[in-house]
Length: 345
Image (cartoon, rainbow, N blue to C red; front, side, top):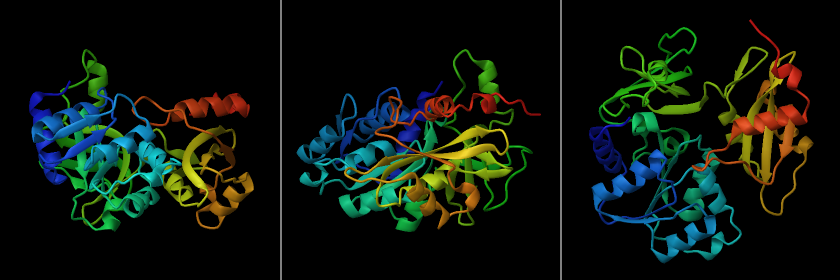
């Protein structure tokens, strides 16, 4: 349950931080049931009085055509959408000179994707971190931030928003540079889940802090990194492994279009790392090449034990990869049902 007060004021603070005006020509295909569509498209556009050019559903070619035809100046798109457009075989046919700002988020954003947006489109790209429960943005980059800050962090907290990062186990506030669960306290936090008081109490504690379920790190300058989800974190032999870190690393391989990391059950180590990779068009890559590439640059405990290649990833309607579906499928394919059902203390 979100309030009118939160929706209108979030439109104000977010568009102000993005330096958006009534002159924008906003092209987006974010669905209206997603906070980035209902608030980040319709209410932003109404608040600004700008032109909104919505697509009924995401199609990379149609969106590229609209950017050129409608001279789009601004868009919000999740990373999978941006990857699909950048890797489309007809991408180079379109002129996107009017596109000045891309805002992305909703899932971890690989640094290499930010680099490609800057180099191949020439637009500024800011990352926003938020969720429906917080009425959108909790943190966001500034247009004036340097590229290192824009590409490697999700920015600073929004106005009138307090943030703290806690150890998920003890509840103690994490030290600077230490990962933990991100909590927010703001006017924009939801009133609760409709007719779900127990779920609401699990998410918003008695002091009003909303528990995001996201793992984050705060740096000395106050900027935030999102390193993964509490539930997505892989624990291999007692070592915490964050999928987003390995995904971003794999995306730097010249033959990789997209990568996803999931944890698979193991009777000895608890969990093992599995990499699922989609090639760039016309490229080929072997399992051994991926493993050797990882061994050369990342900790050995992070090197995938399993590597699988896919033509496409299953997506939710809002463009997020269905990792739970991939995990269940691989458990069946690899015969890991026994390890998956292993009881622990």
